Amino acid sequence: MLRRVAAQLHLPDAELRVELAAAQLVGCAMLRYVIKVEPLASVDPEQIVARLAPVVQGHLTGP
Image (cartoon, rainbow, N blue to C red; front, side):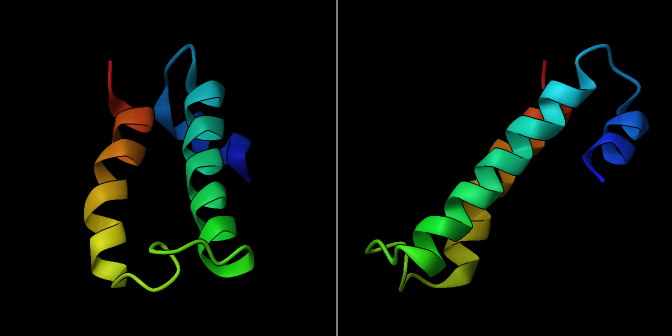
């Protein structure tokens, strides 16, 4: 699945970018739902999206 996403980026380092974005999201999910680290576990989801979305976007489309 990650390779399919990487293919859509048309960049030489696309696989690395997609893997970094996935690592960011999986890490956040692990801390929030599995390990239940506070305050991440109980913060409003909109706050997480607001802070995490620019980082993930940067991995995918940044310089």
